[in-house]
Length: 240
Image (tube, rainbow, N blue to C red; front, side, top):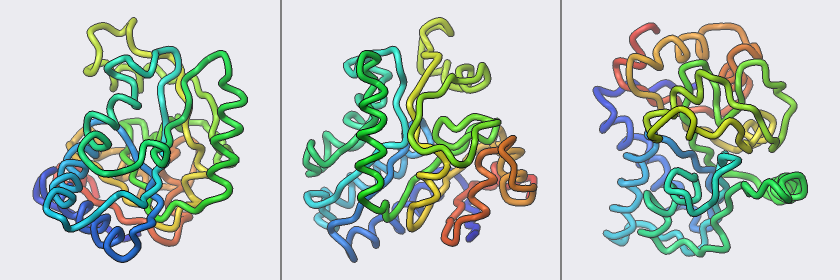
C-alpha cells in the first residue's frame, strides 16, 4: 500500500483528484469505479473543476458505482443514483449510458445483479474509488462478508445504518438493504484509491493497514491488492 497523509480533508481530496486527472489525461477511455457518501464529494468537485477548465473530458469514460440502496426509488433524494447526478454526472460530459449503477428494483433484483456482474466481468476498472466505514466496511461489504462475493444484495448492519442516518430525517427512513460490489469485484480493479478523513475512521484504518486480513474487517482485504493508494488526513492517520 502507498500511504499519503494530508493536513486535512481538502488536501486529501486534492491528492486523490490529481491521480484521477492524470489517469483521464493518459487514457480518455478510462473505466472508473465510483463511490458515494460524504468522503468523495471533494474529489468530485475537483474533477468537475478540471473538466470545466478543459483539462479532462468524460465523454469516453465508463463508470460503475460500488453500491445502491434497496427499497427506495431512484428518484429519492438519498438514492445513490441521485447522489451521483447531483455531485458529478450533471456537471460533466459523461454519457448517461456509460454511467452504470446497480439497480434497486426489488422486482427484478436477481436478474439485475447478474447483469451487473456480467458487465463487470467483461471490463476492468482502471481506478476504483473507496471510502471506509467505521466498522471497516468497503462498499456495503459488512463485517463477516465473504471475500469471494461479487455483486450481491446485503442486509445493512445497525452501525452502517446509524452512520448514514445523517442523510435522513429518522432511522426508520434509512434503508435496511443494499446492493454492493463484493470484495472479489473490488480487488479485480487495476488501482484502488481509498480516502478516509476524520478521527472516527482512525481505528478502522489502523486495523486495515496493520491488522490481519480478516472478514471481520472487510477493508483488510486490500492488503492483498498490488496497487492501493490510501489517502488520509491527520485525524484518520492518528493511530498509525
